[in-house]
Length: 352
Image 1: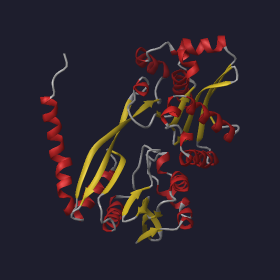
Image 2: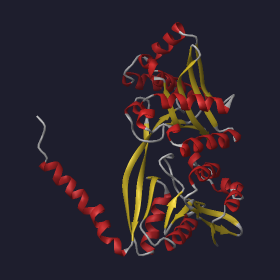
Image 3: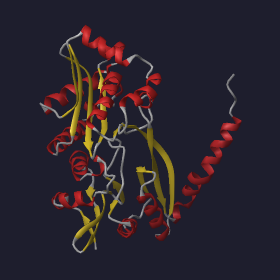
Image 4: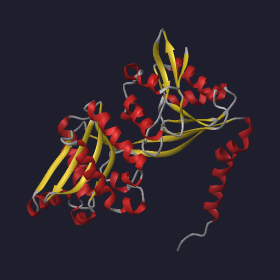
């Protein structure tokens, strides 16, 4: 049975069933309280439209969506690096996708799908059944530090790529300052620690560029609501490096199923010479090994600093569906545009 959940109260009531639906490889971005927090912060312009499949009264699949005019959009934006529909099995995924595409008159776009997730094949198959074209394109790869082995071996393999003597910088902090290191800890004073961390993030280039959390009231609301929700489930972890009473580096992470997911990180640029952000990352990785976690997931894209620590990556894709009237757009993106790019690269003057 298909049920479209359009009322917040009904969506809230799904929390326990939603948790039972989670696959073995679930992430914080799959959790009901992630989507509830997202909706509280960002949902105002939209209408809730969560598609669910039920079997014998039990939740068997869920697609967290909203309606924006005629279009269906995911409950996701650039504040999350991972999105996918959930289903108990292939048949439930098929029923879920068919129900969504039946309601979707316009082109449909999903960003952040894990490339190897069964939902990608499910969405492709559903598109064919609906007489649509589906195009899957590489989007980005999220760096991951595997921490289920030996810390010293990991350090031996990665140390030459750090680009700075991070261990020595850490010792120097202890000598030259009254230094405090709180690494991968539940918050003692949640609101105060968030305020302090958000202030540091906004003090540097992110504040100048307008991309800091506090640069957007919606984003700040989201990260505060999210922190409260995950703290209530004992899944919020913060890291702090304090030098002479001043916050020098800050991490906002989520802990789920033996993996630590980095959402936001920041450092005070006045301490740049000591690389406090990288020192904190090294201590965080070490702490993950000590805690027996499987991985420290750095999320987002393959930025240079993340790859100093990462041992692998998780590729993500963007999936777009096109109806018959969008055949030209599909042909352009799937065939013509890649060919034009190759021709441009061949004809472009080579640099000396």
